Amino acid sequence: MEIKRDKYLEDLKDRMHNGMIKVITGIRRSGKSYLIFTIFKEYLINEVVNEDHIIEMEFDKKENAKYRDPDALLDFVKKQIKDKDDYFVLLDEVQMLEDFEEALNSLLHIKNLDIYVTGSNSKFLSSDILTEFRGRGDEVHVYPLTFQEAMQNYKGDIYHGWAEYVTYGGLPLVWGMRTEQQKIKYLTDLFEKTYISDIIDHNGIEKMEELEALLNVLASAVGSLTNPTKIEATFKSVLKSRISRNTIVQYIEYLKDAFIINEANRYDVKGRKYIGTPLKYYYEDLGLRNARLRFRQVEETHLMENAVYNELLSRGYAVDVGVVETRKRNPEGKQE
Picture 1 (cartoon, helix red, strand yellow):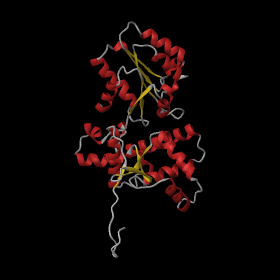
Picture 2 (cartoon, one colour):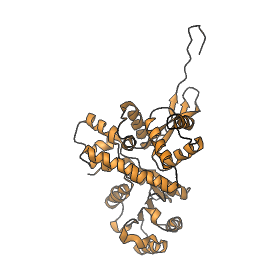
Picture 3 (cartoon, helix red, strand yellow):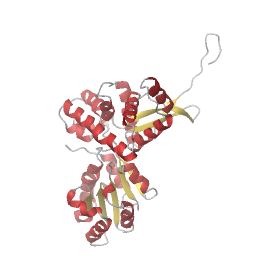
Picture 4 (tube, helix red, strand yellow):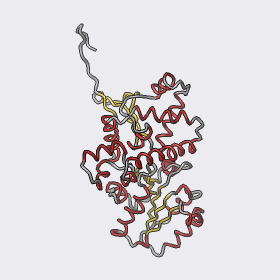
């Protein structure tokens, strides 16, 4: 099943030859590798260069293990350069390359190379890769499929398609699965065995139960105003946990760094100013949010709000939660 992701292809085209390392970020399984090694590569071959001017390396393949040594990679790339024409370097799972910052900086000094990298695992999230190249890295963030993208190859009517989208989300592999059981198992296993493990390993978290409880609280609160203080109160009253507000704030940052959740601040539309807390948290993929709650809280209005929020982010908008304050008179005639 081929899904076109024209928006991201245009993003990459707009950044060609800009003198920076293009860092493709995004949640695991959102389609980062497919974007550069299938969609972008196909465009390059059809419209820009001959295939022998595309240098690619997937570091997670066993046969490429020797190129995880930076000297071996630099030697490999330089041997592919036969002339002064433009070459495109596509590197996947770049965190597996030893001292990758120095290696990529060396490649960046070769004038006719245009470099694109992606990668993400428990040791090095794609957000970390971008941080390492602050000022020299240009980010293209890949979101899970939007509703429009998911409908490209959908065989049913749009209403059934919407029901499936708000239930199972937009991870591309989900839309190639035929049964509900397959989708539920895939999303549940992916969350538990990959995403949570990544966050725990990456940040050295010891209180796994509290992290998982926080994920559940945030999943249940999608579309509702909340903040770390309110979440702390929930932990104390409902879960009988002594987790501190500071720990909750820290855990939320971990989840944001891993692209599991995003947050929207409150903005006073009339006063044209930010109000501060409370705010709203949204899951980057609805299927993962529902998997977190065992598909037991599928409230369409809240999920629609989450889907609209994700859609706007994928289009490049900055999204806040709008607040319009109103005044009215009480029964005594006093203004409230």
